[in-house]
Length: 270
Image 1 (cartoon, rainbow, N blue to C red):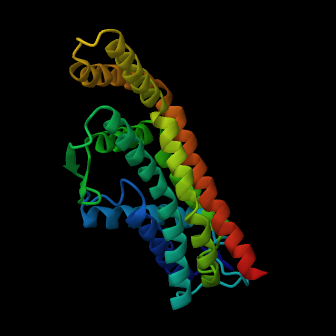
Image 2: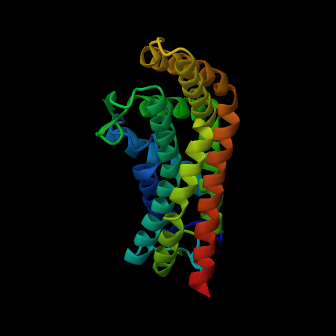
């Protein structure tokens, strides 16, 4: 940063500290980054590297307070940055919940409802298909380059909400918006699991009709393997639409988080 051909190291350090708080809060709650499988030192180094790249990119104009003066580290500013990072992290966590719920629906249709594994992110027992869906979703995120979309969104957040300018009064309004968004993640999970869900229900209906026509058939023995085989075939076929579906949902959550913090800042100033 240069002000009158003089490097303002105090403003640079304050901007870096506030940006580090914002990014760290987001990483602590966002899917994949919040996993316990990633070492805390790795997360800290990654957060610092991101902030070192973000602050100079945004420029000195974005690293100023609402009054145009160079920003300073304050308790209120730190709490505001934690709130912004938490809004981003909680919004993105809905994506992880969508994948987990879709996996639970598919696992129930596959008769895998009693098969649980230890989730390294939450350290609780989660359904087998839920872990599989989360791993596949993470793979799609990385291969589709959505990590760069996340970094671009963080840059836009620094421009939309300058460092240290987020009003704490807007936190309650943001919470009221985030809670109803859970219903959206539920319907998104149903959309993701819809092909497998529809196919397995049709298999159940077909086997039931065969059982009525021929009572001597072992209906119970046929239902589970037919549902599982049909479900896996449909699941493999539906993977072709996963990149576009996940990219749309992930980008939509990022846009929603940006609008949420921007509206909160405008409401707090008014």
